[in-house]
Length: 233
Image (cartoon, rainbow, N blue to C red; front, side, top):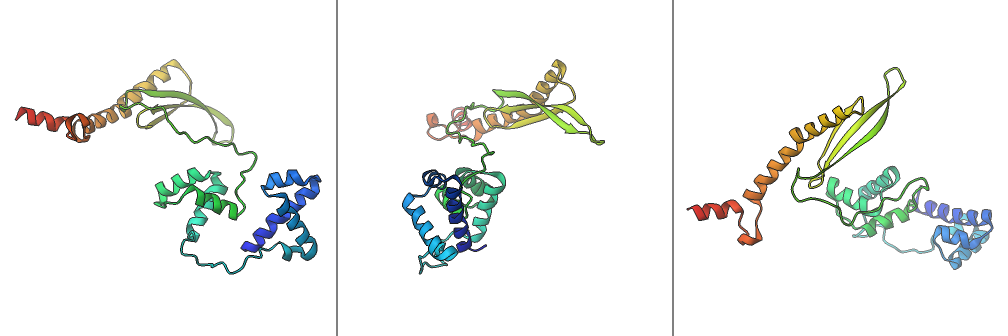
């Protein structure tokens, strides 16, 4: 589908929706257009049909030097349509996993250009956390939760399992384990598993980093062990 075909389709949806509900104002609010724009589209459509809905702007370069590359556009549309990500989350994902740096405004314009600006009504909006509760020392504080899972047996019948999850509040490191029963004994076993296997190691890593590698403002950029060696020499 070409760019002109997408534009014609979008404008016809607005015109058909207004005719269906018999209310121009509500249709304009839904498609986020001005009434004057709606009436302009309607008059041109009545006069020339689909040809009247094509953009009349001409002379724009098709190979603009600042144009978003086609492969980046494909990734943006894939994340939007498949995972229903918002512009900010798409920016984070592209930078982290593809080393692509773009602005959320660019992502928004791409979604708007290809008609995927609005998410389906069934998709919930997830808030972007501006401040996350966290601790400074790994392994010092963690959250534990239990989730009920309904799985399928090999023969097709349902079976319930219990997923224990522990999240370190400093590093967001996650430990998982699944049990057949939700009991006090399994809870104690999971806590022992977390403390002995995962988070204690992270605490040791943090301790080495804090003493050997992390610059301290109180020591004018030196590490505690550098100061200690100087005092003992």
